[in-house]
Image (cartoon, rainbow, N blue to C red; front, side, top):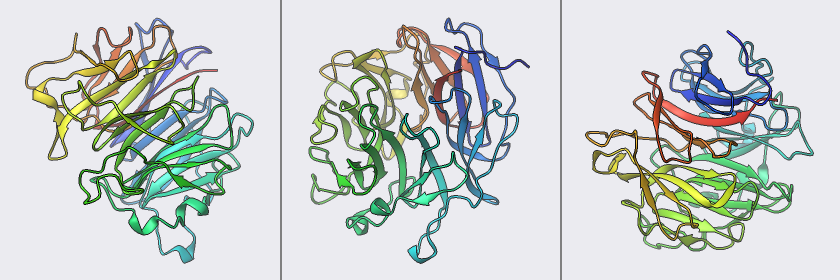
Length: 366
């Protein structure tokens, strides 16, 4: 089996029973599929570090062997363990149940990596994932007593470092909300103004919202989009205020989302019926796209099943690539992975019969 070449698009798929890599040239018509690794482990998140283009990080979890962040620099042939795992301090009263997310640190600090865990907490490594330390200012935040578990637990699931201001970091916690640091993690503020929490007596609390996923646009990192338990939102102010952009969607509820890296006004979501039936609306597998920052939405279904298609797509199981036009990918709990090479206009089945898909991400090999 060959390895990805420089410039190849690399697709990283995490499943409930292992992870695998696919790669292709930028036409994305023919894909090579690597062997399954981490067999028997749940891979909640896997990324190709854009600062290196060959280093992969994986958030791996086992009911028997625990949780860890593993890294590879040879396309998954071998993996390096962390030295002591990702652990809360002994006096915290907390114990890591799962590692949910991994994110690269600033470009100027190529060995810095962040991880988000359950119960919700943020960890930082300064040596490429060998050792991990708590980001205490967030993990001991004064609002923590108001953080409550969502359907998947109390988890810190999304992390992003601002691409123009390396001291600014964004995280999302379910169910606590969106938090921002402007001093490299020394202090944190909840930034939930305008976000609904329909399941609470106070529908617009300072803390308590259930963020399902967010993303910052790479070229305009103060522009944020969010799929929430209670709607889809946009912020043009790095989270200072959020605007509800759910009108025109068949449901306010969903998990997965992706952005077009070339157009800040383009966002993709995959609505589901609601918290009591977490499947695609009306049995139709449809991705919805906005081209105007959420003012209107268009269903995209060419090539996707439109009858008896009760799919569930998890928060990390949708991604876009760097090509022009951008490719969009998503994986289902039924073990299918779908691909569009033309911004969602047409879809095709890329893989089938996988274990339940937990995460999908894209990168470019260096």
